[in-house]
Each structure stands twice: as structure tokens, then as C-alpha cells.
Length: 236
Image (tube, rainbow, N blue to C red; front, side):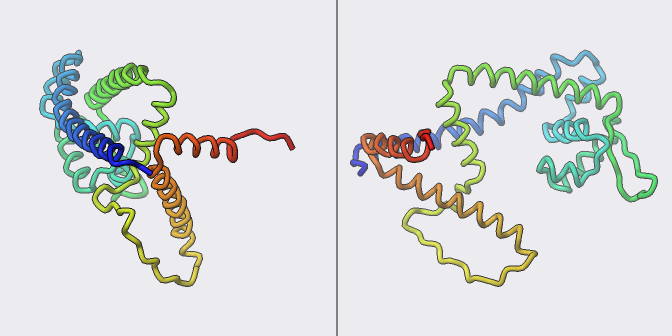
């Protein structure tokens, strides 16, 4: 079992993680200005430079979506990039008024509006892609300092964070009452697969909870047992 000192150390580390997350959020918000400054400094076209000065980060991201998928409608932009329909509608109107994008309709469906980049829009799009390439190089250089095990731990942590609610998290002591069973229909097939995935996640969380209760000595024992039972190669 975990002794009190280990528990205190864990609580202290958790607090450090929370503080680091807050600092990262503030850092990313401040970097919006840094990214726009990079775009301005690397723009070879004065007309593009003037447009970038007036563009928000959201406008750049919507333009990036259009440049990647064009011709594309607003619904697709909203679904694939997580923008609300209202935001897409508002931003695309501004981009059209600035001659950054243009609209067109399908011959057989005049109601569906598609967006394309203009020549100015393409310049801004390519410049924005250059910025992302520069960021990718920086991230890759930063992560080179970590070994394979550390990177795998980081990947696992980020993936679990992506699918975990920190607002509606459940404590170990809380028990969730099972929902009443209902007759299965073909319409429930997607929900059944989702529930199966959720059940697997619950089992993984339960296992992680059990491992978190072990001290370092017993964790080594658990690792040895797992390796012997599940990962060792045996001859038939």
C-alpha cells in the first residue's frame, strides 16, 4: 500500500501538473501574437501583409480549412475543424468581403454554397502552412530530448486526457448505478459498439486504479507478472 509520504509526494506532483497546464494555456494564448508577427515578417507581398494585420486567429484557421479542402461548404468546415456553424458563416462573410475567398454554387444545387481561395487567399494559406511547418520543426526538435519510453508515456497521457472529462470525473468511492436494460434493435448497433468501447475504458481505468495503490516494489512485481503472462513468447 502507498505510505503517507508517497501520497503527499503524489498530491504535490498532481498540483504541479495543474499549475503547468494553466501556464501552458497562458503561453499558447500569448503565442497567437507571436505567430501573427511571424506571418507579417515572412510575407513577401505588402497586400497580404495588410490583410494579415486585420485577420484574427480564427479567420486564419477557417482559411486554412478552406485551402485544405476546397471547394468546401460551411457544414464540412464546421464538422471537421470543430467550428460552430455561426462562426463559419460570420468568418466566411468577412473573408469574402476582403477578397480572400470566393463563393460558387453547384449547377444542380444553387442553395449549396462552396468556398474557394482567391489568389490572395492562396498566398495567405501557403504562408500559414509555412508557419505550421516551422512550429512542427520546433516541436520535433524539442521532443528529441526524450527517450522512447518517455515519449510513449506522453502519448498515452495525452490520448487519455483527450477522452477524459475533468469536470465530470468520478471518484473511486462513487458507484454508478447501472442503467435499466432495454431490448436491442438494429438502431442500437452503434450505441452498443460505443458502450463496448466505454466498458473497455472502464476496465483499463480500474486496472490503473489498482496499480496506483501499489508501492514501487509491488509495481515491479506486477510488471514482471504482466510480462510473463501476456508478453513472453512461448513455443507451441
